[in-house]
Image 1 (cartoon, rainbow, N blue to C red):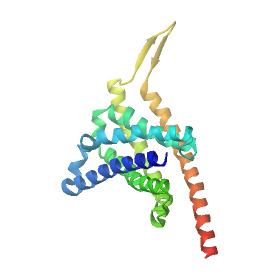
Image 2: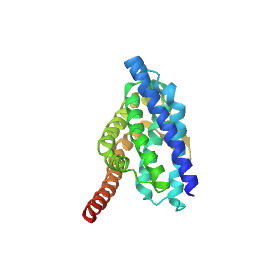
Image 3: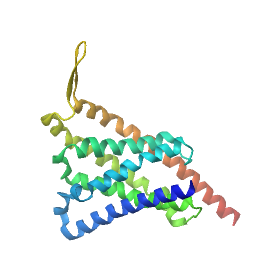
Image 4: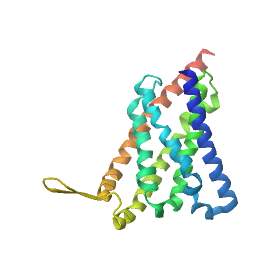
Length: 219
């Protein structure tokens, strides 16, 4: 299992590092012009990485990883919903600069988180990386929430105009599914899910800080 987890974390780290490096290089070379085709250049790799992250839920359920299920479920599902239902389904949204910012924030967190998990899986503690992994989320998560909310908000007019994912089913009575209404409800639930995840990360950070203080006292 240790070998499998190490390989999984390595693959994720390589994928997110490629995305992060690609986005950074394109921004440096092309500036604002790089926003328009960010999704076309990295979208496929991003989709693969986020789909692979579903395995992390299975890892927890099968006892391969010792993590809390609900915070991880919240994190994985919020990204899948935003990426596949909101961004991938609306070509007009893909070229917006908010998508570039959102991808940058997601990958900024992941290029730190996955090497930390990789080293932890093989029993190596790199203090600077451990501290960064337990601290960077304080900046990244609130900004990611704002970017996710704005991305959904920007997509609403296109869902309204095009009727994407809107259906009418003929049951004993007609039932209409209006996807923009579902997205508006999701906008209300999204901050609650992110807050729950942040509370979990904060409790982990408190435990980490307490352990560091104990180590200093022992020394």
